[in-house]
Length: 416
Image (cartoon, rainbow, N blue to C red):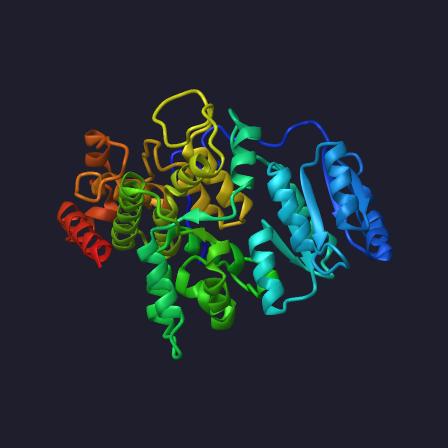
């Protein structure tokens, strides 16, 4: 059953979404087989009025073209002689982070799959029907931030690893390194790492990695990808997250973000309708992923003009960057929309909370506990109104007490 989406802005992806711009988008296709490129030229002839298309037969030629003129999306084959697709897209992420990256490949060997997971934003099988290529390109030419579109795309596009507490990495590697991995236990540990969960959802929602339906939880992602692929991801974890020692102040921030996310996800699992529950729990866990991007950005590429962890200011916000990252990674719409709308006031229809309002209500309740987030604000009137919603009053649950309980549970998990 599809999830409802009845948040503050209905079907809009994010506050202030700009929609498609009127200028032509530039798309670069890279494949070492000229016949494949000729086929793309013919099949995409109908897009000539909307896209400026360029074609390259090698990674080196592609980088030259990117250096000469702007580009919105690169679509690259994976297996090419010399510089393969993963190496090319790694260079693109470093030199041109504003360029969205699509992998088009027919090879799914485990080693190649892991390199693809790090290098790309979206993944398509080869051969792929023209409709799938067009849909992926058009989605990625859309930027979710109206106010800071280009800057937000650069920041989100550059993300290849996210800060993680060393203790969390230790748990992941210990459980996944066991000879007899239990999916339920492994999924529980994986779901406690925000960045790793996001990566699992990105990959498992791609046909390239075998997706047949929308995947919304760590456990369903593991089942979709298969244990060997996920184990290989864990073993290459240094590519997917940063577990360096951040210093006491940053580690405290990481722990606060993590505990708030975990507590909210547990609470919204009790509040959301069955159809919406998986989406709401994923959105709650990923609600502040932009904050993690900000911590990584200030350490790896400090820019005094951009501080995603600052309150106020005129530049991009961590909310905008987090939403853009989840959009680039192709996570299901209800998850991205709920993250985008978490800080907006909600007045849901009486027929149902929807995903975004359920996450908002759970967040506001957790803000009154020891698992409160880094930004203060309880919004008493809004919370009181949300708690009178028929979906919540139908249960005999003391929601404030439930929030305290999940806060304590998250604190105990954090301490272990």
